[in-house]
Picture 1: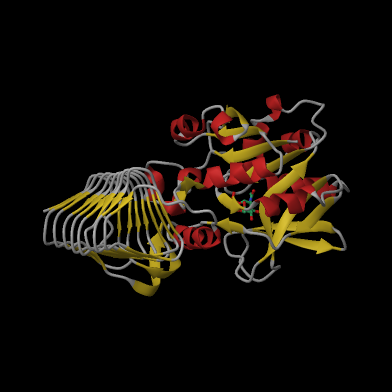
Picture 2: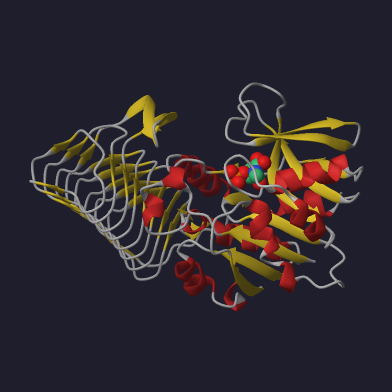
Amino acid sequence: MKAIILAAGEGLRCRPLTLTRSKVMLPVANRPILEHVISSLETNGINEIILVVGYEKERIMNYFEDGLNFGVNIKYVEQKAQLGTAHAIEQAKKLISPEDSEFLVLNGDNLVEPKTIADLLNNYEGDASLLTVRMEDTAGYGVVLKEKKRVIQILEKRPGDLSHIVNTGIYIFTPQIFETIEKTPISENGEYAITDTLQLMIDEGKVITPIPTESKWLDAIHAWDLLKANSIVLNSSRNLTQEGELEEGVIIRGKVAIGKNTRIRAGTYIVGPVVIGENCDIGPNVVILPSTTIGDNVSIRSFTEIQNSIIMNDCRIYSHGQISNCVIGSNNTLGSGFTAEEKENLEININCRIHKAPKLGTIIGDDNRIGSRVLVKAGVMIAVNCQVESGNTIYRDLTRDSVVL
Ligand SMILES: CC(=O)N[C@H]1[C@@H](OP(=O)(O)O)O[C@H](CO)[C@@H](O)[C@@H]1O
């Protein structure tokens, strides 16, 4: 069976991290979310993959190429304008032949484990099947109403507790879906939604089967949700290998992976689950606490403490830093004494709407230069290519190319 993976969107609510990469390329345990998705498909024997790309597509294509390094065969189609999920699927029509009696569709930015896919593959039936999960808080999702073993209505992102059965956006379709996609009307927000296509099918008397799963399905809606996804993946990972060089006096507890050519200097204390990439230089006397992921080519100097955070590739973090519940993009310099204040239950304004964050320090995009003794207030974000001179306190979000003297 072929799989169409939707990977064309930006992921606006994950800004500033998505200013320079699409949401599918955000790393969890040092691998892009999309790589976790592809690996779950491959484990289920699905290795013919059609990737629908658009925003920042080169980054995706350069990383996955033809898929051979990931055990799959990838073909790319482009969705030039972001006109919704039905429109995205339509772009793959030319690569689905009549011999493909059915095919899988899923989002490239939702983490799934192999069992999640297997639950759908082992149970699908009817004209189309849709994988569902039960969730208390369904805000931001589509929910389904069902009767016996049929979906009778899909309600897309409506307020109120209309149903707790959430549409995961993972489907099995037959090529007939393309005929209904052509008839799908444009929605109020100017998109062609696959959920509207399914509603048309229901109205025509077709059978849409909801398939419930309790296996892992995680959507990072906001940048800070990455921390939760990272923690879940790190806690469930097995076979972590330790390469690189550990100097005398390094203490390691729990599950800790260390990449090739990484040097952990004396007196460093690491409590897993923690994943550290290749070519890093860490210590002496650095403290790394659960659940932290550190990318490749990262240097961290003495007396810095990092906890429950993601540090992406090519960062330089100088001494006496305090980094907890933070996501730091790639190629950042954080001067000595960098402190991210953290708070619980923050209310964060994204595009003029308030979003609630559980416990958060800061989110920093790529390519920023932060001087020494800088304090970033809790929940404040720094975009891309900003420069902050030493001794400043950052009270408000910094947009791209900001300079704080
Ligand atoms: C129009 C559409 O396809 N909506 C889907 C889709 O929403 P997006 O906001 O497009 O990611 O994926 C959700 C799961 O992540 C699902 O709950 C919802 O029904």
